[in-house]
Image (cartoon, rainbow, N blue to C red; front, side, top):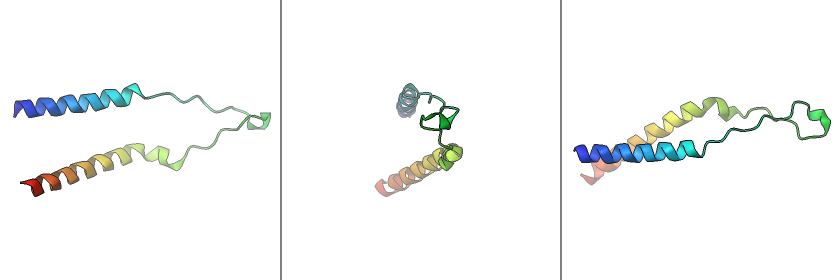
Amino acid sequence: MKNILLKKACHFLFLLVGFLSFAQSVPPPPENPESGDIGGYPASPIDSYILVLFLVAIFIITAMAGKRKKILE
């Protein structure tokens, strides 16, 4: 049992480190779009719901894993 929890913790940390290592900051858009440069676009609507989408994805993953475990037993 302890071995399984250790493996799951290692997998989680591996994914977390991989996610954080590829995180990049985005440079701000130009302030004056009339200057001939490409102007800044408004933030897409999905930006405000990233946390909600992440939580829904985790819920769906755990639900599917639970169903699969029940089927395999």
